[in-house]
Image (cartoon, rainbow, N blue to C red; front, side):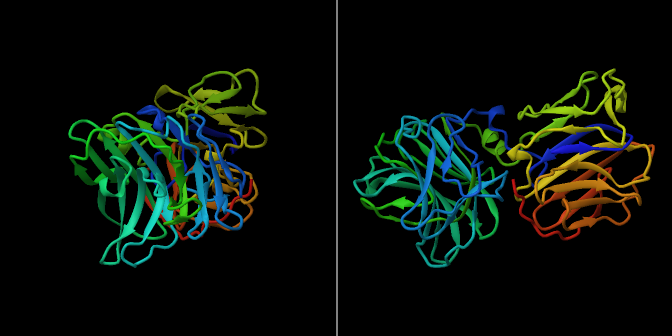
Length: 421
């Protein structure tokens, strides 16, 4: 990602990689015991556990698994075809939670059956072969033909002691959901299902522990025999985590787009040739082709610093980071003070093949879209030279919504495109 401007005062940039202006940063509230972000090359079938050593391997009962693909909730995701694809991690102490714990994942279902009883598995430490069920997160269609999320545990591994918390929010195809299953082992024991950070169903008096089974941890399917699987997921999974211990309502809600941005650059550094990112991602932006005498660091809003660009050669380079790429959605907000409008000037660009660009035009409008491809432009934004203005672009994969100083300008349609690394 590069930031390029001509003769411009530039003070602050937030970049959010989905439509709401936040990113779920787990490390601010609870540190996960296991965390899979599904970043990697397209088609890759190994998923690294960023918090430990519980790597997931994507496979299929026949043929080649779909693997990692380019458009996830944040960056990339793992996709499943609903018939043969699944993933697994080997049994471990981390995955064999027996007291309070929670699991969560962003999930988008491509299709949902209207047939009563049909299940799609998100994740499961659950093996029905020899009664070593522990926990699983699923959706299931009821007698009305509607699907709802469920979190299940078995207190002894058998089918007779399965406890289920069922949500009240209907799950529909084509939409991202944050599904969270939580077991609070505090007596008498309660399980919860959360949808998008909100408690959606509860079952109490389930006991204060679950067994430490030898079942593997499965993704996208439930194991039903020595080499058989069912309840396949037709859709995508992203940003999956397991937390050990109790969690507060606020902690769970924080995972639902209420965290901090993946970039928060205030440009208050005041000297030097790098700009520090104050988000939990702690990116560092290299100041390219700037003077070495610190003359680029000038006074900004409210006696803070700002960064001045020459409009011809200097820019800030944040590197090629997966979370800065276009996934399903993103938001960019920044204060700008252009010296003039003699050319079209870029605010932010991501220069991978078919990357994205956000810029202003000589007519004082804002433009967003594919770099070198289809873009959309506002009408009536009224960007002016010589004044501070707060501009925002929020893209949800279908529409690009533009704001100036908090006022909605327009929301033109823009079809989501694929970005190539």
